[in-house]
Length: 79
Image (spheres, rainbow, N blue to C red):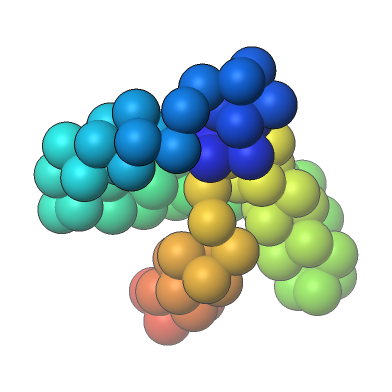
């Protein structure tokens, strides 16, 4: 998200102010909801490929890699 905003020439001040305004709990819940929903739709028997497809999907939505990895770990615990 931050990279895309910088690409659009948004100032660092505005980016930081906007990022701080995001409720982290809501952000995490949205990530987990989206990840669980996508996980259920991926038709892949190989768990590594399934994980890679989910990470690719979440990356296109702009989530940070560390949060994406945490979300995948949570999903794998549940699965």
